[in-house]
Image (cartoon, rainbow, N blue to C red; front, side):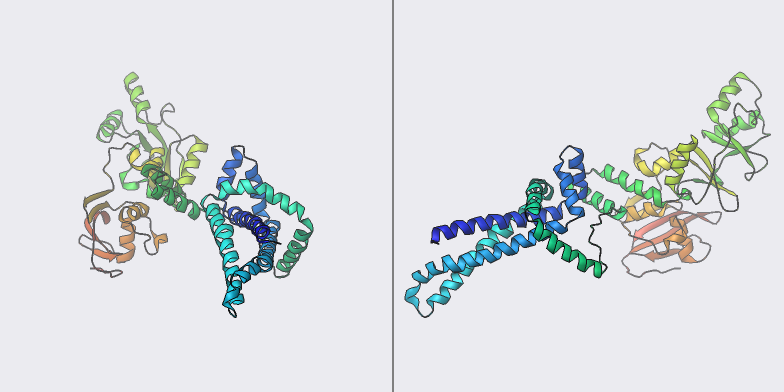
Length: 434
């Protein structure tokens, strides 16, 4: 074999090795979700890639056979054809000429394979894994068919060893909520998702974690009527508290018999002077839900019942609040939902915030950049965090320091924390109270 034939053969071996290397990384790196989208758009080659990823034994066997066979052949060709050429060129440098010829042959063949057959194809495959994978999957399937006896032998032997060791070889690619969070964050950082889109997606996942108590109107803010209240009393209360819905009770809040809608009742008042709150034309049956439901469960309950208003009760069947569909959607939409209420978190300066005591922990964590609060399973609001950490009934000026922030109570109402002042604190102490 002359030097020209040897170089041509080496080039062929380099091309084969490049194809195998590129195939190996592309098929391993191709993302399942992207391939499913491509298959849905009509590229059936993506289905072949997905099938090969589920059972990668045959593919890996072909890769190893190809890489090892090509490496051995390249060494033989280099030693048999290229080395004698360098021997003749370096004959004058005896006794070191033969050693130099071997080193030059090794450097030439190995360097060519590293650069052209390994480095460049793998960089291409890892940059565009799905595009490369769908192009090489059919040739790879043909090679698997062509070398079926070798594939069957080596793959079967490997499977037997894995079975003896009780190791599963089936690729599992289950998508978790953490994976989706990571992808959404990456999309936001890359500019693919707008800030509002990122905010909405994050809030949708929060719905599964938050309970209804984090967004309901608590007991002390519930406006209700006694079933025997006069028309004048009802109209006066409606003018003072212009809600769209009011509970109707038999004496007290623990005996809810239904609710009325303001527009329906006022329409009847215009037609009739005296309308009883128990009139079936205005009184509607209440939807009762437990305070342990997540916001996602509440949304599903509203959907199945056809209601958009519910009374929240605790384990003792006591009314603890009311919640509307708008309350639930405000968690998802946030600032996109029009509301006349003041925001629960107001930033005063670069390093200080005014926070309502009823603000859910998730909103505080997002506003302050805090990853977690200690023992957060025991409370849901920032007021709950303060009470749990202080271990006493809170009063004004009580404070604690956590995660580089000072949380100070500046207003209370009926033993309830109404407002806090949060400021950055230079101390790194985990917690301090006064």
